[in-house]
Image (cartoon, rainbow, N blue to C red; front, top):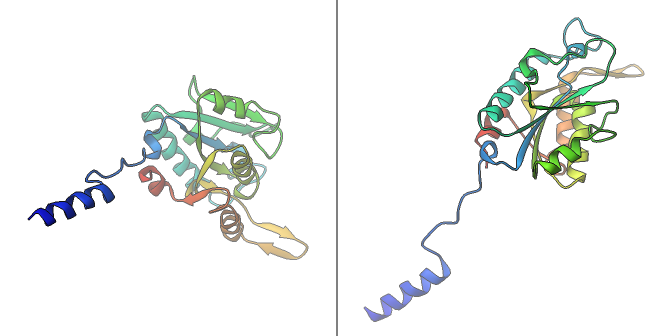
Length: 200
């Protein structure tokens, strides 16, 4: 009996009886912000640069936006300065009090106060979604990672378009997946919206 109690005591030292605390879920973490990139009218049917299925992506971005609003998390709306079609899509239209950053470059951090907004809010992790996957979304993801943020990208809340070089056309789905593949595991964690809202 004495030997058994000794072994039990040693096990308790090696393996604590209480499990380590779980990480804070993304949506409940005050150090996490949502950044929505360029979900604007010119990327939708009838606009200057219509994307492939932008409505599906904006709907997912809207779902993320609603969840972040419900939990009182930091939200930043990023738009590209254009002459026409610059209105934010109704799915993700900013509300009073939410930060809006207008940019002239692919990289949303370049020439804007985006970094300052995030630093002042104590943000350590960012969720980035929007349009176009291979351009301004990718640019923001790489820059955010370089600035030291942990980055998450909900793939189904992003959209892009077919690309053509010489006589070769690369369809939007391939552009989208290729871009996300280069980011995943290096600059960001890529997953879908539902998984992100449940993730730690």
